[in-house]
View 1 (cartoon, rainbow, N blue to C red):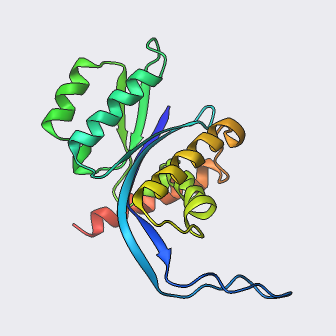
View 2 (view 1 turned 135 degrees about the vertical axis):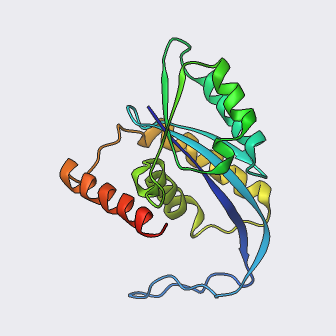
Length: 189
C-alpha cells in the first residue's frame, strides 16, 4: 500500500543576510527577508508497510508528470505485487491519459481520500518531516541545491529512518473525523 501525493511550490529560498550569531539562552535568529530562486515540486509515495519513500522531483505537476511518477513506481516495485495507492482528488489523477494507462496496468488500484480530508493520507506527515528536517532552516541559492537537499533527505530517510507507518489515533477517532469530513462536504454543496 502506497500513500501518494505531490508537494508543490517548494521554494528555493536564500536569506539576504547571514544568520544572526547565537548567544547562550537565545534561539536562532534570522532576518525576515529572503531572495527566492525558484520552485520545484515533489511527487512522493510512502510505503505504509516499511516506511520507504519513492520520490520524483518535477518542475510542474500536470497529468504528464503524474504518469511519469506512476511509471517510476511501476519500475521500482516488485512486479508480482498489486499496488493500492491512496491519493487525494486532484484532477491530475483522473485525466483520460491516466485512466488509459491504469486500464493497461491492472496491479494499480487507486483509492481516493474524501474531499477536505488530506490528513488521511499518511504521506502528508512525511512531507511535514521533509519540511521540518530539510527545508525550513535551509538556505538554497538555486533550485538545483534545493533538489539535492530533497534527494539527500529521501535517501537518508530510506536508509536510516524508514519504519512501518502506524496511526496514533484509535479507529473510532479516525472514523469520527472521516464522518465529520464527509458531512462538511455535503453541507457545503
